[in-house]
Image 1 (tube, rainbow, N blue to C red):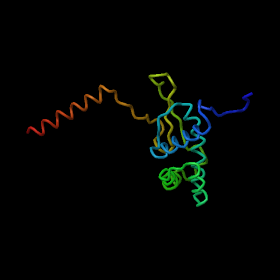
Image 2: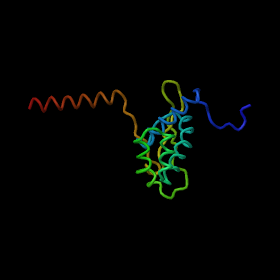
Image 3: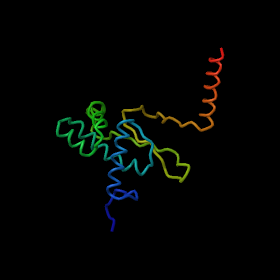
Image 4: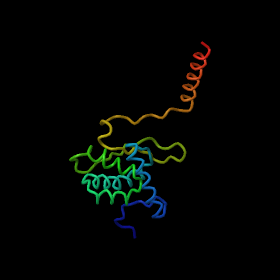
Length: 151
């Protein structure tokens, strides 16, 4: 029976799940907003919020504990030096999950996960440009460079 089991296994072994959570956590701490599937974002939130709570205390033992859970040194450094002072006296709830449109290929529900103090309420995540828009911009740049080189 699966009663009271709230965590999804994400169709992965436990080692793979742990590696996934560590990598997503490092990416979230580095970029402060990532785009992932909704299920992964829901699973990631308690993992990162625990790390932020550990970082708020800021002792050497806490830094070692954070390094044992998140082996990327630069992410732990940013967590302790930048993010922990920024959350200050906030009692939990450091992350928000913003739902996005479904993924084009398989229809998976997507979401942005970000730190609450990172962007103001109601701010939309940046829109990705289509291939056609990127090619159009590139052609403009090339034409401008040719014009400057010829002049």
